[in-house]
Length: 221
Length: 104
Image (cartoon, rainbow over all chains, first blue to last red; front, side):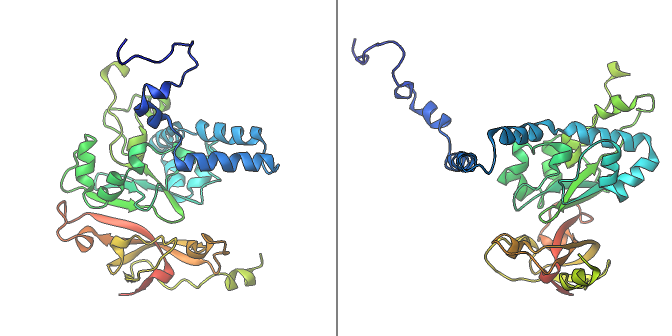
């Protein structure tokens, strides 16, 4: 058969010959290869065990924006807790059983009718990982990091957030030892909701500041 | 660590909240945490964050001592960008170590 001249000897042949683009996609990039090599060296030399590496991966995966959502919902229903969250954020986390001890310093920024906060790290991807888990890819993108400081309202508009002109936008560039979490405003008409229902309105993006908290859907009320 | 050691390892706090500051317009290589877009710009001390090891030496095997006071410095967006296309009331805040600041 013209153009189909190789031998079909079972399935042991190299699929990359058929799909060079796929092979390129699946290739471990340079820094990935490097980190795997370092991991194997550390294990070979007895510095770490394979189990410890896996435990740390599991720990990192277990952290999620749900931690932040719980903090925000509690702050919405308990004014005293909100004050503690703003003044002693790590202690407030401990109160909720959230381990924030690996954060160097933790700062909570309260959104109000007058002020809307937006967090970015222009130099890399500093992010309150114990509270929000791993940052989304867009947070680490060059486009977000460069544009958030120059045109924050345009960025928010792309996330569907339109702020009144008179609301002051405060961009916080977290490039040193502090990690920032936005405390979004409680949506209107949520008086009857439980703390757990309120937490479901608190999205990751609202705690970065590109959106506000979700409005309750009519079916949830 | 005793109190005396803490004093030796830490640069004294030189700026107070509300004080006007200018970010030094230095160019230097290495693990610098002062974003280029605020260098040479005038802002104010919004809050004193504490004292932290200097990442510029710590990133290269040094101990980062003495600790540098770290400040949240506020800027008007219109000071940073000409023109700034959004609201003139908007601000930007960034954490800056003391050795990058001078009185303005």
